[in-house]
Image 1: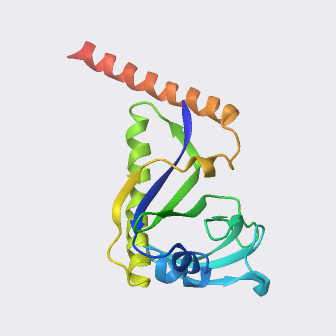
Image 2: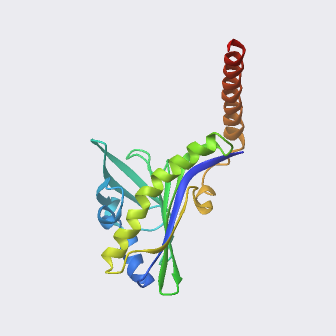
Image 3: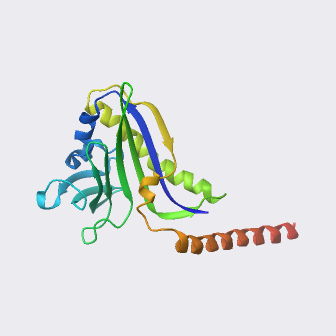
Length: 207
């Protein structure tokens, strides 16, 4: 089976849902929220209020490289869900999808931060190891994001942190079906496995 890659991190923050929504929905404050440290500054195109279809640009810095992304809002459901799809200034909203989801929970709010990447990998071994590694890398940047949110609302550190090295299903549902690209990638994956087995058999014969 072929599936999109990504990650999901959620935690309980001891703060009102409305206070947390005020932060995550204010994209100009994302530089202070983002745990990756890559977001430097954010501006909304045309200065209009955020809604589905709106675009905001983000100045990014990663590994010594400065670049700009143009992000199109794809989910806007105050005060519960906000998602945006990353793209380029000339082509907003063509790459990965990021999301915040807020749900009332005893003693606070369950905050979920998730990402669905636009590339897919087989779910079987050994590709499953690569899927997990990719997902964990993104999760490692989202966990500090939730900690930043808690700090910004003067709440204790997040509790009951849950990490899943798979993308949220609500985001992958917005990406193209994997029937055709999945079949192509599966064929490529099987070819790689066959090549590895052939090399291993040849090595065994020589020993």
